[in-house]
Length: 398
Image 1 (cartoon, rainbow, N blue to C red):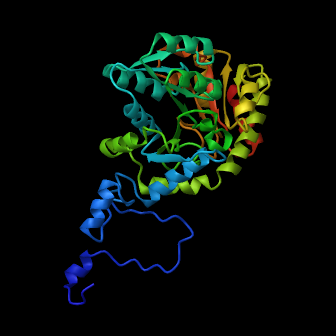
Image 2: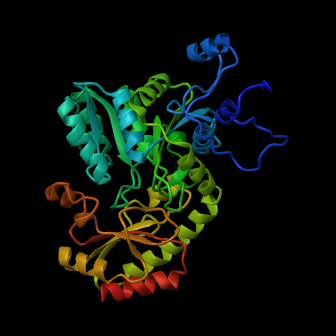
Image 3: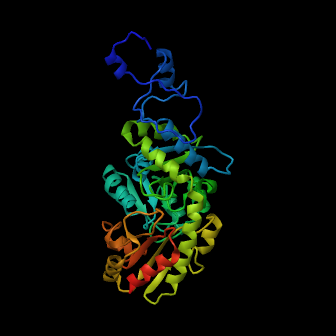
């Protein structure tokens, strides 16, 4: 820098980065934009001839590093490479993929026991855009095949496994095979499992989504989402275009928090699973509990399937109380140790009543048909001492 510049100019100019060794932790790039050494370099980056950062709405080194790490997790052990994008929320990841894939006249085939926000997005946002949603039992592969034969406008099968909040599991490999026969894209929300417990792309699924707000971060201090697909997928460039133009990308601070949380992902999920298994076993024998939904229980209808495609059963479970809505509300108001909160995946135990919280806007007829009853309680089992968790739930049931 010119030594003769004015003091005001010295104040305004960026400080020169002085770095002799690499930082041990991923730096937070708080820059909104990036500079070029020449107009030729800027042209090469803008045309895609050269890799380079331009503007943080497109991504930046912090965001890109975390997205790439999640993609590597989903493709770990695979014979293919994956790309990843980090978005501003799980819903941003879902909507970005839907808008990149579907157009008026197309249809989406899905299940009835989805996260309530996803159901609302499909029916209330995509519906008015002439993108129809067909709800069916995705476990019934003959029915899925029949729908795809009769409905060539179905361009996507969208699903969660395990489902939120009933913990139903779907056969990833079989659904993917049916979809491929009909040139249909498959999308799996892998938020409940994370790639530590389940890798849908290894079973043929095209795209995987996460609300990284949940288990990937694990500490309840950031909101973001991830979208992962095969590196060679034809839609990659269109997805990136839509991220830039719609503005759904993540920010550096949330990306850094996700990265920090992911360092303990494996050991956290081991403990989450251990506690959830013990809690499920306790609830299964409780006289006030009608049923327990946990894929780690031999009584779960999808127990064998879960064992085949999940490494462990995870930290999520749900159970139905006798007494319906009033019993559910009384239980929630009686909690003293566990937390009443509309999220999941934190290190502490979080409990939700779907009928009055996450699924309050979903048609009761649709809810009840897929097992989201008025007495259903969803538990994101934390890593606290299991005796403390069980003691609170026991006194809350009364």
